[in-house]
Length: 448
Ligand SMILES: Cc1cc2nc3c(=O)[nH]c(=O)nc-3n(C[C@H](O)[C@H](O)[C@H](O)COP(=O)(O)OP(=O)(O)OC[C@H]3O[C@@H](n4cnc5c(N)ncnc54)[C@H](O)[C@@H]3O)c2cc1C
Image (cartoon, rainbow, N blue to C red; front, side):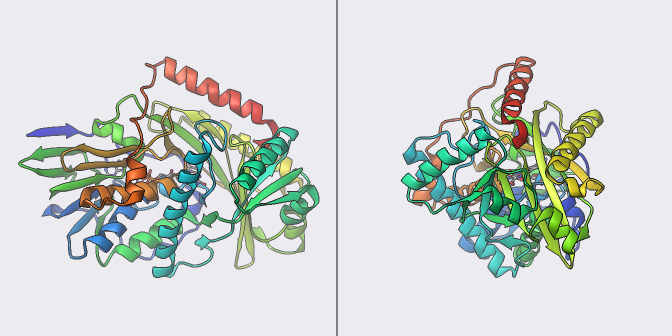
Protein backbone atom coordinates (compact mmCIF):
# COMPACT_ATOMS: atom_id res chain seq x y z
CA UNK A 1 0.00 0.00 0.00
CA UNK A 2 1.21 3.55 -0.72
CA UNK A 3 -0.21 6.75 0.76
CA UNK A 4 0.48 10.24 -0.54
CA UNK A 5 -0.44 13.11 1.73
CA UNK A 6 -1.48 16.15 -0.31
CA UNK A 7 0.93 18.91 0.61
CA UNK A 8 -1.13 22.03 0.00
CA UNK A 9 -4.78 22.76 -0.67
CA UNK A 10 -6.13 25.50 -2.95
CA UNK A 11 -6.73 29.03 -1.67
CA UNK A 12 -7.64 32.24 -3.45
CA UNK A 13 -6.91 35.96 -3.47
CA UNK A 14 -9.96 38.19 -3.75
CA UNK A 15 -13.43 37.55 -5.15
CA UNK A 16 -13.65 37.02 -8.90
CA UNK A 17 -16.04 39.49 -10.49
CA UNK A 18 -17.28 36.74 -12.81
CA UNK A 19 -18.30 34.61 -9.82
CA UNK A 20 -19.81 37.56 -7.97
CA UNK A 21 -22.17 38.41 -10.84
CA UNK A 22 -22.99 34.79 -11.72
CA UNK A 23 -26.13 33.21 -10.26
CA UNK A 24 -25.70 29.74 -8.85
CA UNK A 25 -28.78 27.60 -9.47
CA UNK A 26 -27.95 24.25 -7.86
CA UNK A 27 -27.29 23.15 -4.27
CA UNK A 28 -23.82 22.58 -2.82
CA UNK A 29 -23.20 18.94 -1.85
CA UNK A 30 -20.20 17.89 0.21
CA UNK A 31 -18.80 14.41 0.68
CA UNK A 32 -20.09 12.69 3.82
CA UNK A 33 -19.13 9.05 4.44
CA UNK A 34 -17.23 6.45 2.45
CA UNK A 35 -18.33 5.61 -1.07
CA UNK A 36 -17.18 3.48 -4.02
CA UNK A 37 -17.21 4.55 -7.64
CA UNK A 38 -15.99 3.40 -11.05
CA UNK A 39 -14.27 6.73 -11.62
CA UNK A 40 -13.00 9.45 -9.36
CA UNK A 41 -12.10 12.84 -10.78
CA UNK A 42 -10.25 15.27 -8.51
CA UNK A 43 -10.80 18.92 -9.47
CA UNK A 44 -13.97 20.49 -10.89
CA UNK A 45 -12.39 22.99 -13.29
CA UNK A 46 -12.23 22.78 -17.08
CA UNK A 47 -10.14 19.57 -17.03
CA UNK A 48 -12.10 17.74 -14.34
CA UNK A 49 -15.60 18.59 -15.53
CA UNK A 50 -14.70 17.96 -19.20
CA UNK A 51 -13.38 14.54 -18.16
CA UNK A 52 -16.66 13.90 -16.32
CA UNK A 53 -18.65 14.94 -19.37
CA UNK A 54 -16.61 12.66 -21.66
CA UNK A 55 -17.10 9.74 -19.27
CA UNK A 56 -20.87 10.21 -19.32
CA UNK A 57 -20.63 9.88 -23.11
CA UNK A 58 -18.30 6.91 -23.41
CA UNK A 59 -19.14 5.05 -20.18
CA UNK A 60 -22.84 5.69 -19.59
CA UNK A 61 -23.98 3.87 -16.48
CA UNK A 62 -20.61 4.01 -14.72
CA UNK A 63 -20.58 5.67 -11.32
CA UNK A 64 -18.58 8.91 -11.64
CA UNK A 65 -17.61 11.05 -8.67
CA UNK A 66 -15.96 14.48 -8.78
CA UNK A 67 -14.37 16.05 -5.70
CA UNK A 68 -13.32 19.67 -5.41
CA UNK A 69 -11.67 21.40 -2.51
CA UNK A 70 -13.76 24.52 -3.09
CA UNK A 71 -17.14 25.37 -4.55
CA UNK A 72 -17.35 25.02 -8.32
CA UNK A 73 -15.94 28.16 -10.05
CA UNK A 74 -14.47 29.67 -6.88
CA UNK A 75 -10.97 28.60 -7.89
CA UNK A 76 -9.16 29.52 -11.14
CA UNK A 77 -11.86 28.15 -13.46
CA UNK A 78 -14.11 31.06 -12.44
CA UNK A 79 -11.32 33.65 -12.33
CA UNK A 80 -10.20 33.86 -15.95
CA UNK A 81 -10.90 36.32 -18.74
CA UNK A 82 -12.93 33.76 -20.64
CA UNK A 83 -11.11 33.69 -23.98
CA UNK A 84 -11.33 30.27 -25.62
CA UNK A 85 -8.72 30.78 -28.30
CA UNK A 86 -8.27 28.64 -31.40
CA UNK A 87 -5.26 30.31 -33.06
CA UNK A 88 -1.86 30.09 -31.31
CA UNK A 89 -1.46 31.77 -27.98
CA UNK A 90 1.67 30.92 -26.08
CA UNK A 91 2.21 32.64 -22.78
CA UNK A 92 5.38 30.96 -21.64
CA UNK A 93 7.35 32.22 -24.63
CA UNK A 94 5.90 35.73 -24.31
CA UNK A 95 4.83 35.42 -27.94
CA UNK A 96 1.75 33.99 -29.60
CA UNK A 97 3.48 31.22 -31.49
CA UNK A 98 6.59 29.35 -30.44
CA UNK A 99 6.26 26.36 -32.71
CA UNK A 100 6.93 25.29 -36.28
CA UNK A 101 4.19 25.71 -38.90
CA UNK A 102 3.23 22.02 -38.61
CA UNK A 103 3.07 22.14 -34.82
CA UNK A 104 0.96 25.30 -35.03
CA UNK A 105 -1.53 23.49 -37.30
CA UNK A 106 -1.79 20.65 -34.80
CA UNK A 107 -2.28 23.15 -31.98
CA UNK A 108 -5.07 24.93 -33.84
CA UNK A 109 -6.79 21.60 -34.59
CA UNK A 110 -6.56 20.67 -30.90
CA UNK A 111 -7.88 24.04 -29.74
CA UNK A 112 -10.79 23.75 -32.18
CA UNK A 113 -11.57 20.25 -31.03
CA UNK A 114 -11.80 21.59 -27.45
CA UNK A 115 -13.93 24.56 -28.49
CA UNK A 116 -16.23 22.17 -30.39
CA UNK A 117 -16.53 20.00 -27.27
CA UNK A 118 -17.40 23.09 -25.21
CA UNK A 119 -19.88 24.27 -27.86
CA UNK A 120 -21.76 20.95 -27.63
CA UNK A 121 -21.90 21.42 -23.85
CA UNK A 122 -23.19 24.98 -24.24
CA UNK A 123 -25.91 23.79 -26.59
CA UNK A 124 -26.97 20.72 -24.64
CA UNK A 125 -27.07 22.58 -21.34
CA UNK A 126 -28.86 25.59 -22.89
CA UNK A 127 -26.22 28.18 -22.04
CA UNK A 128 -27.06 31.73 -23.03
CA UNK A 129 -25.14 33.84 -25.56
CA UNK A 130 -23.77 35.78 -22.59
CA UNK A 131 -22.29 32.59 -21.17
CA UNK A 132 -20.89 31.16 -24.42
CA UNK A 133 -20.43 33.61 -27.27
CA UNK A 134 -18.86 32.91 -30.65
CA UNK A 135 -17.53 36.46 -30.64
CA UNK A 136 -14.12 35.92 -32.21
CA UNK A 137 -11.41 38.10 -30.71
CA UNK A 138 -9.25 41.06 -31.58
CA UNK A 139 -5.54 41.34 -30.89
CA UNK A 140 -5.39 45.04 -30.06
CA UNK A 141 -2.20 47.05 -30.67
CA UNK A 142 -1.39 50.24 -28.78
CA UNK A 143 2.24 50.60 -29.90
CA UNK A 144 4.33 50.34 -33.05
CA UNK A 145 5.74 47.08 -31.68
CA UNK A 146 2.18 45.77 -31.21
CA UNK A 147 1.32 46.76 -34.80
CA UNK A 148 4.41 44.91 -36.01
CA UNK A 149 3.46 41.81 -34.01
CA UNK A 150 -0.03 41.96 -35.51
CA UNK A 151 1.36 42.27 -39.05
CA UNK A 152 3.58 39.27 -38.54
CA UNK A 153 0.73 37.29 -36.90
CA UNK A 154 -1.45 38.27 -39.89
CA UNK A 155 1.23 36.95 -42.27
CA UNK A 156 1.32 33.59 -40.53
CA UNK A 157 -2.49 33.41 -40.52
CA UNK A 158 -2.50 34.22 -44.23
CA UNK A 159 0.04 31.56 -45.08
CA UNK A 160 -2.07 29.03 -43.16
CA UNK A 161 -5.21 30.13 -45.01
CA UNK A 162 -6.77 31.32 -41.75
CA UNK A 163 -9.49 33.99 -41.99
CA UNK A 164 -8.59 37.31 -40.36
CA UNK A 165 -9.21 41.04 -40.75
CA UNK A 166 -7.20 44.10 -39.78
CA UNK A 167 -8.93 47.02 -38.04
CA UNK A 168 -7.51 50.53 -38.23
CA UNK A 169 -7.40 53.09 -35.39
CA UNK A 170 -10.78 54.58 -36.35
CA UNK A 171 -12.48 51.17 -36.33
CA UNK A 172 -10.92 50.36 -32.96
CA UNK A 173 -12.17 53.67 -31.62
CA UNK A 174 -15.65 53.06 -32.98
CA UNK A 175 -15.72 49.66 -31.28
CA UNK A 176 -14.15 50.54 -27.92
CA UNK A 177 -14.73 54.28 -27.56
CA UNK A 178 -11.02 54.87 -26.94
CA UNK A 179 -8.29 56.26 -29.21
CA UNK A 180 -5.69 54.28 -27.27
CA UNK A 181 -5.31 51.65 -29.98
CA UNK A 182 -3.51 52.04 -33.29
CA UNK A 183 -5.10 48.96 -34.79
CA UNK A 184 -6.36 45.44 -34.28
CA UNK A 185 -6.39 41.99 -35.84
CA UNK A 186 -9.69 40.10 -35.75
CA UNK A 187 -9.87 36.32 -35.93
CA UNK A 188 -13.33 34.74 -35.94
CA UNK A 189 -12.75 31.34 -34.29
CA UNK A 190 -12.45 32.37 -30.64
CA UNK A 191 -15.29 32.08 -28.16
CA UNK A 192 -15.73 34.30 -25.11
CA UNK A 193 -17.34 32.74 -22.09
CA UNK A 194 -18.60 34.09 -18.78
CA UNK A 195 -16.26 31.64 -17.04
CA UNK A 196 -18.17 31.25 -13.77
CA UNK A 197 -21.49 30.77 -15.59
CA UNK A 198 -19.94 28.26 -18.00
CA UNK A 199 -18.34 26.16 -15.26
CA UNK A 200 -21.43 26.29 -13.07
CA UNK A 201 -23.65 25.51 -16.08
CA UNK A 202 -21.47 22.51 -16.91
CA UNK A 203 -21.54 21.25 -13.31
CA UNK A 204 -25.30 21.65 -13.04
CA UNK A 205 -25.85 20.00 -16.44
CA UNK A 206 -23.81 16.99 -15.32
CA UNK A 207 -25.47 16.72 -11.92
CA UNK A 208 -28.03 14.07 -12.96
CA UNK A 209 -25.27 11.69 -14.10
CA UNK A 210 -22.26 12.62 -11.95
CA UNK A 211 -21.89 13.06 -8.19
CA UNK A 212 -20.08 16.35 -7.68
CA UNK A 213 -18.97 17.00 -4.11
CA UNK A 214 -17.72 20.50 -3.33
CA UNK A 215 -15.83 21.82 -0.30
CA UNK A 216 -14.39 18.30 -0.21
CA UNK A 217 -10.61 18.61 -0.48
CA UNK A 218 -8.59 15.49 -1.13
CA UNK A 219 -6.04 15.44 1.68
CA UNK A 220 -4.44 12.06 0.93
CA UNK A 221 -4.49 9.43 -1.82
CA UNK A 222 -3.98 5.74 -0.98
CA UNK A 223 -3.25 2.94 -3.46
CA UNK A 224 -4.07 -0.58 -2.31
CA UNK A 225 -4.98 -3.80 -4.16
CA UNK A 226 -5.57 -2.01 -7.47
CA UNK A 227 -7.87 0.62 -5.96
CA UNK A 228 -7.33 4.27 -5.14
CA UNK A 229 -8.88 5.85 -2.07
CA UNK A 230 -9.09 9.61 -1.80
CA UNK A 231 -9.47 10.83 1.76
CA UNK A 232 -11.33 14.02 2.53
CA UNK A 233 -12.33 15.73 5.79
CA UNK A 234 -15.63 13.88 6.23
CA UNK A 235 -15.42 10.90 3.93
CA UNK A 236 -13.57 8.99 1.24
CA UNK A 237 -14.02 7.78 -2.32
CA UNK A 238 -12.56 4.50 -3.56
CA UNK A 239 -12.24 3.84 -7.29
CA UNK A 240 -9.99 1.79 -9.59
CA UNK A 241 -9.35 4.80 -11.83
CA UNK A 242 -8.64 8.37 -10.83
CA UNK A 243 -8.18 11.45 -13.04
CA UNK A 244 -6.33 14.40 -11.57
CA UNK A 245 -7.72 17.67 -12.95
CA UNK A 246 -6.01 19.84 -10.35
CA UNK A 247 -3.70 21.80 -12.67
CA UNK A 248 -0.53 23.01 -10.84
CA UNK A 249 -1.70 21.27 -7.65
CA UNK A 250 -0.59 17.99 -9.24
CA UNK A 251 2.78 18.83 -7.69
CA UNK A 252 1.13 18.77 -4.25
CA UNK A 253 0.06 15.20 -5.05
CA UNK A 254 3.77 14.33 -5.43
CA UNK A 255 4.03 14.38 -9.24
CA UNK A 256 5.99 16.52 -11.72
CA UNK A 257 7.92 17.97 -8.78
CA UNK A 258 10.05 21.02 -9.72
CA UNK A 259 8.81 20.84 -13.29
CA UNK A 260 5.87 23.28 -13.11
CA UNK A 261 5.82 27.07 -12.92
CA UNK A 262 3.02 28.53 -10.80
CA UNK A 263 2.25 31.85 -12.41
CA UNK A 264 -0.24 34.26 -10.90
CA UNK A 265 -2.47 36.30 -13.20
CA UNK A 266 -4.31 39.36 -11.87
CA UNK A 267 -7.63 40.89 -12.90
CA UNK A 268 -10.13 43.59 -11.92
CA UNK A 269 -13.74 44.33 -12.91
CA UNK A 270 -15.46 47.70 -12.76
CA UNK A 271 -18.70 48.51 -11.04
CA UNK A 272 -21.66 48.57 -13.47
CA UNK A 273 -22.31 51.73 -15.46
CA UNK A 274 -25.33 52.63 -17.61
CA UNK A 275 -25.26 51.50 -21.22
CA UNK A 276 -26.55 54.92 -22.27
CA UNK A 277 -25.21 57.51 -24.74
CA UNK A 278 -22.46 58.58 -22.35
CA UNK A 279 -21.45 54.98 -21.63
CA UNK A 280 -21.21 54.30 -25.34
CA UNK A 281 -19.30 57.54 -26.06
CA UNK A 282 -16.58 56.69 -23.53
CA UNK A 283 -16.38 52.94 -24.01
CA UNK A 284 -17.90 52.16 -27.40
CA UNK A 285 -20.23 49.31 -28.29
CA UNK A 286 -21.98 47.16 -25.70
CA UNK A 287 -19.75 44.14 -26.07
CA UNK A 288 -16.19 43.64 -27.22
CA UNK A 289 -13.24 41.44 -26.33
CA UNK A 290 -9.58 42.41 -26.79
CA UNK A 291 -6.45 40.40 -26.33
CA UNK A 292 -3.14 42.26 -26.42
CA UNK A 293 -1.08 42.18 -29.62
CA UNK A 294 1.88 41.57 -27.33
CA UNK A 295 1.03 38.49 -25.28
CA UNK A 296 2.33 40.18 -22.11
CA UNK A 297 -0.09 43.11 -22.43
CA UNK A 298 -3.63 43.62 -21.11
CA UNK A 299 -6.73 41.55 -21.87
CA UNK A 300 -9.88 43.69 -21.76
CA UNK A 301 -13.55 42.84 -22.17
CA UNK A 302 -16.69 44.95 -22.08
CA UNK A 303 -20.05 43.29 -21.66
CA UNK A 304 -23.56 44.59 -21.13
CA UNK A 305 -26.60 43.04 -19.58
CA UNK A 306 -29.97 44.53 -18.61
CA UNK A 307 -28.86 48.07 -19.51
CA UNK A 308 -25.68 47.96 -17.40
CA UNK A 309 -22.12 47.57 -18.70
CA UNK A 310 -18.91 46.49 -16.99
CA UNK A 311 -15.32 46.27 -18.12
CA UNK A 312 -12.92 43.54 -16.95
CA UNK A 313 -9.16 43.95 -17.29
CA UNK A 314 -6.39 41.41 -16.81
CA UNK A 315 -2.77 42.47 -16.81
CA UNK A 316 0.48 41.53 -14.99
CA UNK A 317 1.90 38.16 -14.02
CA UNK A 318 4.19 36.95 -11.24
CA UNK A 319 5.77 33.59 -10.42
CA UNK A 320 5.14 32.57 -6.80
CA UNK A 321 6.17 29.63 -4.63
CA UNK A 322 3.23 30.28 -2.28
CA UNK A 323 -0.43 29.35 -2.82
CA UNK A 324 -1.63 32.94 -2.53
CA UNK A 325 -0.09 36.32 -3.34
CA UNK A 326 0.64 38.82 -0.55
CA UNK A 327 -1.78 41.66 0.25
CA UNK A 328 0.80 44.22 -0.88
CA UNK A 329 1.25 42.39 -4.21
CA UNK A 330 -2.54 42.40 -4.69
CA UNK A 331 -2.71 46.12 -3.98
CA UNK A 332 0.13 46.84 -6.39
CA UNK A 333 -1.57 44.86 -9.12
CA UNK A 334 -4.96 46.56 -8.59
CA UNK A 335 -3.16 49.91 -8.89
CA UNK A 336 -1.55 48.74 -12.13
CA UNK A 337 -5.00 47.77 -13.44
CA UNK A 338 -6.27 51.23 -12.53
CA UNK A 339 -3.46 52.93 -14.46
CA UNK A 340 -4.02 50.75 -17.54
CA UNK A 341 -7.76 51.33 -17.38
CA UNK A 342 -7.57 55.10 -16.87
CA UNK A 343 -5.12 55.47 -19.75
CA UNK A 344 -7.61 53.76 -22.04
CA UNK A 345 -10.87 55.16 -20.73
CA UNK A 346 -10.33 58.73 -19.47
CA UNK A 347 -14.11 59.24 -19.50
CA UNK A 348 -14.51 56.49 -16.87
CA UNK A 349 -11.83 57.55 -14.41
CA UNK A 350 -14.40 58.00 -11.63
CA UNK A 351 -15.74 54.48 -12.13
CA UNK A 352 -14.49 52.25 -9.27
CA UNK A 353 -13.29 48.69 -9.59
CA UNK A 354 -15.76 46.50 -7.72
CA UNK A 355 -13.60 43.36 -7.74
CA UNK A 356 -9.87 42.63 -7.93
CA UNK A 357 -8.53 39.10 -7.75
CA UNK A 358 -5.77 36.75 -8.83
CA UNK A 359 -5.58 33.12 -9.89
CA UNK A 360 -2.91 30.54 -10.39
CA UNK A 361 -1.82 29.27 -13.80
CA UNK A 362 0.50 26.35 -14.50
CA UNK A 363 3.19 26.68 -17.15
CA UNK A 364 6.06 24.40 -18.12
CA UNK A 365 9.36 25.65 -19.51
CA UNK A 366 8.94 23.58 -22.69
CA UNK A 367 5.20 24.45 -23.06
CA UNK A 368 3.98 20.85 -22.65
CA UNK A 369 1.19 19.52 -20.41
CA UNK A 370 1.73 17.29 -17.36
CA UNK A 371 -0.29 14.50 -18.93
CA UNK A 372 -0.55 10.74 -18.93
CA UNK A 373 -0.93 7.66 -16.75
CA UNK A 374 1.44 8.61 -13.96
CA UNK A 375 0.83 5.52 -11.82
CA UNK A 376 -1.31 2.47 -12.47
CA UNK A 377 -4.90 3.74 -12.80
CA UNK A 378 -3.91 7.32 -11.94
CA UNK A 379 -4.12 9.84 -14.80
CA UNK A 380 -2.95 13.44 -14.93
CA UNK A 381 -4.76 16.07 -17.04
CA UNK A 382 -2.77 18.98 -15.65
CA UNK A 383 -0.62 22.00 -16.53
CA UNK A 384 -2.56 24.00 -19.09
CA UNK A 385 0.18 26.44 -20.05
CA UNK A 386 -2.05 29.43 -19.40
CA UNK A 387 -4.87 28.66 -21.82
CA UNK A 388 -6.88 26.24 -19.74
CA UNK A 389 -10.34 27.07 -21.03
CA UNK A 390 -9.35 25.11 -24.13
CA UNK A 391 -6.22 23.19 -23.15
CA UNK A 392 -7.59 21.81 -19.88
CA UNK A 393 -10.86 20.98 -21.63
CA UNK A 394 -8.84 18.97 -24.14
CA UNK A 395 -6.64 17.41 -21.43
CA UNK A 396 -9.71 16.21 -19.51
CA UNK A 397 -11.18 14.60 -22.63
CA UNK A 398 -7.84 13.06 -23.57
CA UNK A 399 -7.33 11.63 -20.07
CA UNK A 400 -10.64 9.77 -20.45
CA UNK A 401 -9.66 8.50 -23.89
CA UNK A 402 -6.38 7.24 -22.46
CA UNK A 403 -8.02 5.65 -19.42
CA UNK A 404 -10.74 3.94 -21.47
CA UNK A 405 -8.38 2.76 -24.23
CA UNK A 406 -9.94 4.93 -26.95
CA UNK A 407 -6.89 5.35 -29.17
CA UNK A 408 -8.10 8.33 -31.16
CA UNK A 409 -5.79 10.36 -33.48
CA UNK A 410 -6.29 13.31 -31.10
CA UNK A 411 -4.94 11.22 -28.24
CA UNK A 412 -1.90 10.09 -30.25
CA UNK A 413 -1.07 13.72 -31.00
CA UNK A 414 -1.68 14.81 -27.42
CA UNK A 415 0.58 12.04 -26.09
CA UNK A 416 3.38 13.08 -28.45
CA UNK A 417 5.06 15.33 -25.87
CA UNK A 418 8.10 15.05 -23.63
CA UNK A 419 7.89 15.53 -19.85
CA UNK A 420 7.78 19.12 -18.62
CA UNK A 421 11.40 20.28 -18.25
CA UNK A 422 13.07 20.55 -14.85
CA UNK A 423 13.17 24.00 -13.26
CA UNK A 424 16.30 25.40 -11.65
CA UNK A 425 16.36 25.21 -7.83
CA UNK A 426 14.92 28.04 -5.71
CA UNK A 427 15.62 30.90 -5.28
CA UNK A 428 17.14 30.90 -8.79
CA UNK A 429 13.84 29.89 -10.42
CA UNK A 430 11.94 32.66 -8.60
CA UNK A 431 14.52 35.27 -9.55
CA UNK A 432 14.98 34.07 -13.12
CA UNK A 433 11.30 33.60 -14.00
CA UNK A 434 10.19 36.88 -12.41
CA UNK A 435 13.01 38.69 -14.22
CA UNK A 436 11.90 37.27 -17.57
CA UNK A 437 8.26 38.23 -16.85
CA UNK A 438 9.29 41.73 -15.82
CA UNK A 439 11.46 42.18 -18.90
CA UNK A 440 8.64 41.00 -21.18
CA UNK A 441 6.15 43.32 -19.45
CA UNK A 442 8.49 46.29 -19.79
CA UNK A 443 8.97 45.43 -23.45
CA UNK A 444 5.17 45.31 -23.87
CA UNK A 445 5.01 48.92 -22.58
CA UNK A 446 1.66 50.57 -23.33
CA UNK A 447 0.17 47.22 -24.37
CA UNK A 448 0.00 46.36 -20.66
C1 LIG B 1 -6.90 36.33 -14.22
C2 LIG B 1 -6.87 35.13 -15.13
C3 LIG B 1 -7.20 35.26 -16.48
C4 LIG B 1 -7.18 34.12 -17.32
N1 LIG B 1 -7.63 34.23 -18.60
C5 LIG B 1 -7.73 33.13 -19.37
C6 LIG B 1 -8.32 33.21 -20.67
O1 LIG B 1 -8.79 34.26 -21.11
N2 LIG B 1 -8.37 32.09 -21.41
C7 LIG B 1 -7.89 30.88 -20.93
O2 LIG B 1 -7.96 29.88 -21.65
N3 LIG B 1 -7.38 30.77 -19.69
C8 LIG B 1 -7.29 31.86 -18.91
N4 LIG B 1 -6.82 31.73 -17.64
C9 LIG B 1 -6.38 30.43 -17.18
C10 LIG B 1 -7.52 29.46 -16.83
O3 LIG B 1 -8.34 30.00 -15.84
C11 LIG B 1 -6.91 28.17 -16.35
O4 LIG B 1 -6.04 27.74 -17.36
C12 LIG B 1 -7.97 27.10 -16.11
O5 LIG B 1 -8.79 27.45 -15.02
C13 LIG B 1 -7.30 25.77 -15.83
O6 LIG B 1 -8.30 24.80 -15.73
P1 LIG B 1 -8.04 23.47 -14.93
O7 LIG B 1 -9.30 22.70 -14.92
O8 LIG B 1 -6.83 22.80 -15.47
O9 LIG B 1 -7.64 23.92 -13.47
P2 LIG B 1 -8.47 24.81 -12.37
O10 LIG B 1 -9.44 25.62 -13.09
O11 LIG B 1 -7.44 25.41 -11.55
O12 LIG B 1 -9.23 23.65 -11.62
C14 LIG B 1 -8.57 22.80 -10.74
C15 LIG B 1 -9.50 22.47 -9.59
O13 LIG B 1 -8.84 21.52 -8.75
C16 LIG B 1 -9.24 21.77 -7.43
N5 LIG B 1 -8.28 21.15 -6.52
C17 LIG B 1 -6.96 21.42 -6.39
N6 LIG B 1 -6.42 20.67 -5.40
C18 LIG B 1 -7.44 19.91 -4.92
C19 LIG B 1 -7.52 18.93 -3.88
N7 LIG B 1 -6.46 18.58 -3.12
N8 LIG B 1 -8.71 18.33 -3.64
C20 LIG B 1 -9.80 18.66 -4.40
N9 LIG B 1 -9.77 19.59 -5.38
C21 LIG B 1 -8.60 20.21 -5.64
C22 LIG B 1 -9.30 23.29 -7.34
O14 LIG B 1 -10.12 23.73 -6.27
C23 LIG B 1 -9.84 23.67 -8.71
O15 LIG B 1 -11.24 23.87 -8.69
C24 LIG B 1 -6.80 32.85 -16.79
C25 LIG B 1 -6.48 32.72 -15.43
C26 LIG B 1 -6.52 33.84 -14.59
C27 LIG B 1 -6.17 33.67 -13.15
